[in-house]
Length: 138
Image (cartoon, rainbow, N blue to C red):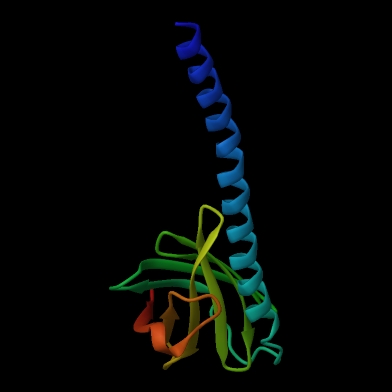
């Protein structure tokens, strides 16, 4: 019986300390992934030639709302929080949820009331892993 209790206590200690190890690994992954997103955005340095601020809708992503202050963009794209920059005639966004950057997004004007977009599940954006979508002004 003593042996069982000792083994159970050891397992509990290892389990608790193991959670810390997994948490540290997960935190490191989040940090690396999100740093790649910040670096990708900081590489876009041209002055803003477009404003994407406002409310939009996409059949793929749902509703989107962007606020633009100079080059900086914040808002949401469907269920994802977005942050990014406008560089030239394109907006470069990172879409995140619960602190994890999931998508790299590039938007450009396609007429007065629409934006055409490309997204990648890679951070930073990769052409080989992309999809296309369209946003219409609401």
